[in-house]
Length: 384
Image (spheres, rainbow, N blue to C red):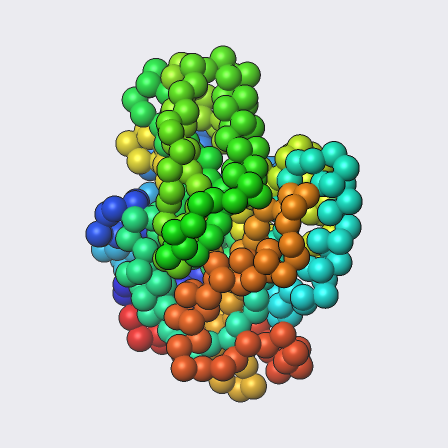
């Protein structure tokens, strides 16, 4: 924890992460290049690295953190470096939350297309929350409730600070020639709901499965879809098919082809992406992009869900953190607006409660003049 704290104070790109089922967390840190950029991948290299991309998937390179320093050697770098802190993040969280009227407006615009032509579009929202709780305390409290997921905390200049606990596997690669494993994950209801899945959720999930299966087959892979199952994440559960594909695989091409899947964008994908760009009033940033690691040449990539975008701020003279908490849901012809909004809110309720604890600092209507971005400086020491 102390190494992550030091990187946060000095704007050093780092990641703290654990693969699903792992109890221990790994730490990487690396220094930006001469252009102030933090690239995940280098040409002709399969070295261990952490990567995180943006939802629109149109960046010139994938941001990330290479395994240059571990938790011990980062201290030696910090003590000897002459140019700390390093470059500031290029983007910041939004002060305002998504207004319900904006969500309703988006819903009303996409519904006619879905009724006439079918398909799906995923509409998202974000809630802006301020908390004085130490970020590492928040993160570890959250991770303690979600040990079956990919959990990560990271900072890069391109993305700022993100953390998440995502249940959705986008791609896991085996040894060379073994192919990949992925999953279709869609449809949502409360974890304790024992009723039969309704047609709306089954349709939404089926579109995702068909898209992934066709995409992999079009790449010349031999595809096998496991039987339908359920995957539970805290207070909600989803429909899930594990999908395996064998054949010669270029992982970067598969990632580019699959992301964003209809589970986070919609179907037909290009139509849904246009609607998202037109009607959503917030920027998704890295939400619903992909995040993961390459370890020993094998990829473990996940859809970036149940995540938050964070920045340290000066809040009325006090030090605090501003969080954007993202969630969404698939809209089909039979969707009901109230149900979809409530589903999206329920997906972030546990994380929001952890962040605020006993505080009541949601800031949809806070005067922006009270909120100033103020990166961690040398005279601010976090308690980890």
